[in-house]
Length: 223
Length: 216
Image (cartoon, rainbow over all chains, first blue to last red; front, side, top):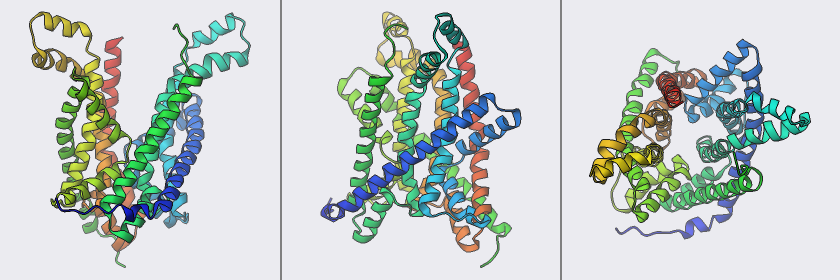
């Protein structure tokens, strides 16, 4: 092994990497926020909506979950301009991530809605709880407890998946790495450091999400 | 610029065989690695348990694209040159080992403790307990999520196009650069993935429901 490591080329561009990292966090958080709203609407429509709407949502879920994200990104970025909708790389990335995460989110949230048994609500009424108390204590909190682990791991998956957006030169961490790589030709060093940065982000979010769960969503002692 | 001909479409669809071959190769590699990870993770040797835990978290906490880039560049450090096919197979196999390892660990742990104790009472040692008693029962539980992961893996092979391996996504990009009909071309490729993945997803979902009913 006579490879000479040259990490200084990467650390010279540390500011670019940090800017890329912040963009990745922003892009993921924005996509998750918008995706959650879409997913909640989708889940409500799927549980209560008219039949044709339910079919349309099912078709959307199956279509998105059974095709690669990269293809979805290409259709949105390269395909939509053909029908007159031209998006910047960043906008196309955000849209593709929202479209992708919504399909998974709808199923997660629907499972949360369906995890609430009707007898629980009736029991709440029998105990004399007011409607708002019933919603907060008997519907919302247990539903959140049920879907919280899936939702948070979906966020981490989304963040890791956003690295694929570098293929259309969106402004994020992997694209910043590609830039540095093409300037310095220190391929291994750049991608090694950036992989470490992604791992640090994942570990950070795992810790934050676990902390939030402990603080706000603790299960009652007896169930 | 020329227009999209039937030869182009055939070229793209023919590249589907590389997508399938890469999926199968990575799944086979991932099955071997995954079994080792699952055994280490559920076993009794503390050091191995931690090593397997670290391996799983490492691959679940970093983007697959970075794993593929490193699979492409790391062998070069040791003076071994890999082509895109080798790098894609290596990267996806290591990736699949981590995810299948975690899935199969979960399946092994669903087997009740009494089964271990009963087989120990019959005088079976660890490997025969595993092979004759635990794994056959874990297999039933493991099939739906394993098929579900296979769908993820087939979709994941599209990222091999980024390190230059010519499977269906890369073939589509090549043709699109010549004829520029992105909506048709990438739509067609999406459809090809869907035709392969959807039946697998549906099978996995049905098996899971059947298992849930059986357990009730």
